[in-house]
Image: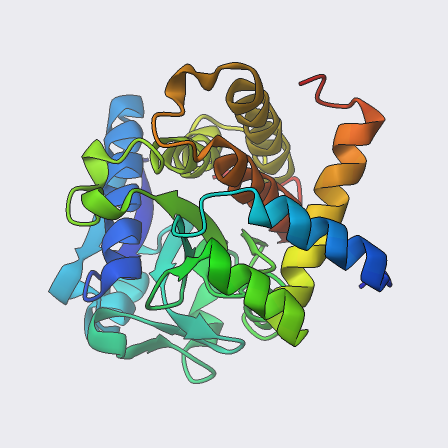
Length: 71
Length: 219
């Protein structure tokens, strides 16, 4: 996994904090959904899931900046 | 000769209920193509005995596995182990699509290396969906869930339409990109303000969708 520094983590947390904190994400294979608030906590805890969330958000931000999607 | 597709789709908890529904939609698409015999191990039929019987008697080319699992097992109804090291050899020369947690990197390698499967399509992390809390018992009415259903169905439809495993994954990824664009531009579908989260979920599925083994396999 690409090394992502704390500044990037903070940016990603700030992005997630703009979302509805009670919206639910269901990871199929897991029994129960998690909220956006839970996702932020996973990042803060530096858990495996938190690392994945940061990795994907970071890749997503890079894709947006690259203009690949032209949103 | 008609080719056979085997699908396992338990539905004993929230995650498997959504997966069961997704698979049901995929079955409708396969039926539209009309060239395949479908063995549907739905709900309580998704048990090891039925799974092995179908593999032995029908010799399916495509196997679609839905549910919980681990790096070397897939679970069926009430989490009964339906696939593990003792029957992995039955995947010999098959194409596998698995929506099983963290499946692509570990279970996929297991299926290719220990089971001699031709190809394995899955996710290197759990397949992510966004749901409406008020629609958990009625996924067909869940608007947040709809784009994720499209992703699943696109993958299966691509395979049954004759594309290779590599082409099917590529087409599915392109479809995900288009959905992300839709949710970026068309706020009209964002009734509950969940579009940014839906885009994130879609990008997660784009990021983790993988094909292992042969990328030129066709059903």
